[in-house]
Structure formats: structure tokens, C-alpha cells
Length: 270
Image 1 (cartoon, one colour):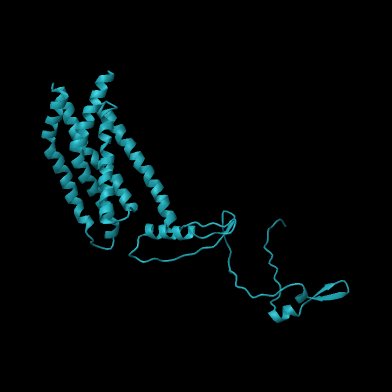
Image 2 (cartoon, one colour):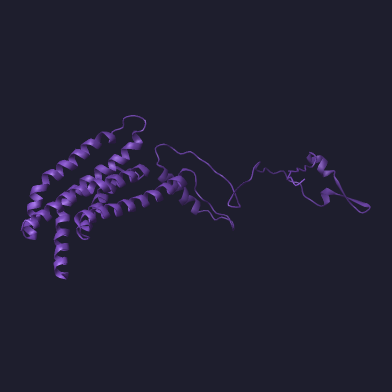
């Protein structure tokens, strides 16, 4: 009592000929089934799939290894958009692409969080809200190099490349920290802003280049295909190398200019 049980009701297996010879009784008369219905042989799915209470059909395919997943998805989406679907019909690309989209969403959040944490640490160390902002500007300078090197090499930005860019955020700001800290020390020693910037650049150009160069050379072997997982490691290393090259060069040019205008604006408002 009180138990739920599944009850299956099946109609006896009949051939097409037997169905055509079937009669339906209506009162005292018998009506042939062929006068009421039209028989047609069709193929149907053995299983019906549903997702979020909607009936779906899965279509899977493999693609050539010479093509990237991004290229295949873009081409498939372009072709599917040319099709005029009936009402209440739509398409959705899932599988690896769906997982990749979810991974990118998580990595974007991690990237924003890393920038915020870097700014908070710099603000507490420099006891200022302006100069950490000057240092954080190294991040887009590094991003330019990371994206540009993938464009020049014709490689797609995959998940490992984004992980490399996130790593780059913490590495690229080191050059700016060294330079801005040297400028602040020169200012505390009594130098004016322009002599302090020029002197800091002369004093710190060698350690900045050496720090970046050692990191680039250490990551260089990862860009060479050794082993089965080389395709996974290479994009991460390439992103860091490209970002360090651009950030090192532009840090010595852009950051001093930004520092000068920030200080000029601060004294003007003060």
C-alpha cells in the first residue's frame, strides 16, 4: 500500500498487413482502419532527449586537427545562422565549446580579481592611491604585447593563453614598481620631479632589463614542442614572453610620463 509502481502497457506487435486488415467496431458496424488512416513507413528516434523541458537533438562531429576549435565554432555558427528554422526551433553549440565559454568566464573574473588585489597591495605599500594606479597601467602595456604576439604567430587565444596573461599581470608590474620606487626615493632625497625621473631611469634600466630578460629566457624552452603536452604549455609561455617584451620597453617610456603628469595634476589640485 502506498507504493508507486511503473506499469507498462504495450499493444501486440502487428505487421503492416495486419494493421491494414484491422477493423474498428462502432456499434453494430465494422469500419476498416484503412478508411480512417493513411499508413506510411517512417524512421523515428529510439530515444527522445530533453533539456530544460525542451526536446533536443544532439549532432556531433569531429574536425581536422589543423583547425582550431574557435575557427570550427565560428564557421559552424556562421552556416547555422543562414538556415531559417521553423518557429520554436533554435540551435545551441555545446560540448567542448560550452566548457570553453565557461572557462573563459571564470578566467575573466580571475583576471579582474588579480588586478584589484595587485592595486590593493600596492596602495598599502606606497601609502598612496595615485602611484599604484600609475603602476597598474603596466597591465594594458603587457596585454598589448601578449595579444600582438599571438596575432603575429597566427595562434588562437585559448584557455592556457589566458592563464598566461593572468600570470603576466603579477610579473609585468615588477618593472614599474622598481622604477616608481626609485623615482620616489630620488624625490625624497630632494631632487625635482624631472631630474628624479631621469636619474631613476638611468639607475634602474639595467636591473629592469635583466629581470625581464631572465624571465623570458627561462620561459623560452616551454615554447618549443617537447613532449605530448607541449601544445598546452606553449601558449602560456608565449603570452608571458610577448607581454614582458612590450611591458619592459613601454615601461621605460610610458610610466615616467604618466608619473610626471600624475604628480603635476596632484600639485595643481593641491
